[in-house]
Amino acid sequence: MDDIVIEFKDVTKVYKLYKNDKARLKAVFNKNIKHTKKMAVNKVSFSVKRGEAVAIFGKNGAGKSTLLKMITGVTFSTEGEIRVEGRVSALLELTAGFDPELTGRENIYLKGQIMGISDEEIAELEKGIIDFAAIEEYIDQPVRTYSSGMKARLGFAINSNIRPEILIIDEALSVGDVNFKKKCVEKVNEIIEREGVTLLFVTHSTSVAKEFCSRGMVMRQGNLIFDGDIDSAIERYRQMLDEDREIAKSKKIFTEKKQ
Image 1 (cartoon, rainbow, N blue to C red):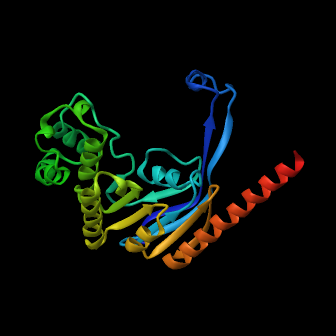
Image 2: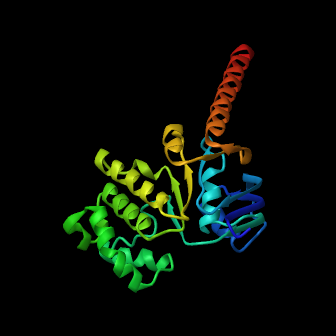
Image 3: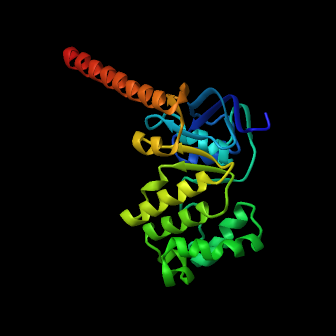
């Protein structure tokens, strides 16, 4: 049990969907406001050991990102138990948490504080973050003046340089130009090779997943349908995509005949 750093036990996540933002606000004070329910994750159980590198596959809406958000504490489960041990660095929404009025340098400290890192440790990491982001003199300009690419570069630089024990990536390796993408891949490899670092990687790219991961999980409509070695997981994922294409094709033929 001491080697397990992430554990899910019968975890379910149900989102309440409201007609509009006004109805959502009213629901804060009145639980009787009409809404529909969307089950994003359904009774999922798994555990990840320290040092494992695990890819999570699935189509959009399968529940992959919801899993990661529950691990990082962005959202909470409706039912079940979740245990996470260690400092988590999440390359999800890279620009989330930035204050547009603060400079890039000031946002390094802000995001560090949000992650629970002391100012002393951030000061030690500051130069490495700035060098990695490579946004030069813009580091002392307000973030509102940055392009979306510059903000993403700074976000990746911060999250990948804080010495994480658990690294979570959700398609974040697509940021920036070709050279920066290569730099990101090299950085992730460097982190993984560090002893004891655990990786969870959500991607649609089986080739990239195979480069990093030895284990794979496949999600389908909120359910975990496969968990095993990476080659078998990729095979099951491709099989699932083929099955879904056949189902969609059959529905289209049925609809055309009915018309």
